[in-house]
Image (tube, rainbow, N blue to C red; front, side):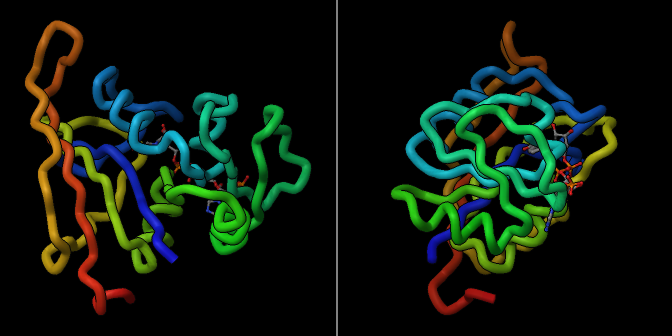
Length: 168
Ligand SMILES: NC(=O)c1ccc[n+]([C@@H]2O[C@H](COP(=O)([O-])OP(=O)(O)OC[C@H]3O[C@@H](n4cnc5c(N)ncnc54)[C@H](OP(=O)(O)O)[C@@H]3O)[C@@H](O)[C@H]2O)c1
């Protein structure tokens, strides 16, 4: 079953700080919204608590071992990534694992597509993603975004597609 991961990382692989994104990049967030809308988004409990609300236009699934977790209306809970993917597979559309770091690492071996934003800066933070090896994947650069008055850092957006036969 096709499975995608989507994340933004700095040059030093930072993805988070104090439970939040370590940058404010509105056009990068717009890319995330555009890409995931119409699909299912699977996220760790801390990533969910970063926004604590339903991401509209998508099936929202939070992975947590806490069965008493309080979630916003329409947000579903799964106790594992496998269960989350099974729930998402009942719906139409692409299935995205959107973080945090442990879920991205767990999803990577089964992922067929990875949307990776590289923020052109070294960023201090407390959450880092594994440097995944995309050398045997087909890589396409979707966008190169410059620094401007709304974006303190430039960034590049890549789509990596795993070659058939390379599934782990
Ligand atoms: N830059 C990006 O693209 C990006 C993307 C996503 C998140 N972030 C940032 O990353 C940080 C949060 O990420 P994080 O890695 O610290 O945490 P996280 O993955 O969002 O959440 C970790 C929690 O998710 C649950 N969980 C994860 N894997 C599980 C599994 N296999 N089975 C059952 N439960 C599982 C557990 O919840 P319980 O403890 O409730 O059991 C675990 O404590 C924030 O700063 C956020 O803003 C950045």
